Length: 195
Image (cartoon, rainbow, N blue to C red; front, side, top):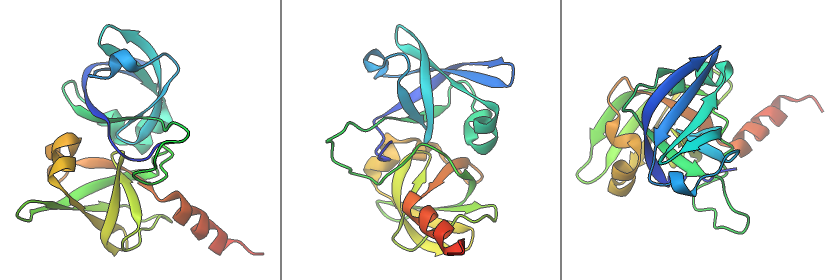
């Protein structure tokens, strides 16, 4: 369980295929605080730490994860948003995030607004929805939806978030990971059920 509040940005230093899996090694300022078998969110994807060597740690992404997320498109040098799982009793500063990406989306517009940025994302038609002023997780970042439409939405980014996540690397055409609000997903599923 995560909150969507990014702790650190890691840098991809190695990518190794092993069958249909991808071993992703990253350098991070929090590596010395990690442990083997720990859950760690990478651009919103919950992955398990499998190896630690000095300031580099390794996680493994399986085929389904690579297909549903942007991790399959990582390159050496890419910046990845990191968040460790919640501690029981901590404040929930973002929203409830599972680290289970629902689908990818594409950045279709970026507007600088004199001290903030408006990013617009478009995703393929699915059962997933956003609602105005609801929560959404983009590359692991807990955000508030503005301009909710069918299969697209925008988010407003403050300078702190822009500078301390990988949002500052986004361009029009950048592929991101989206996790829709878990409460909304349950309500949507219940609405389709025949009681």
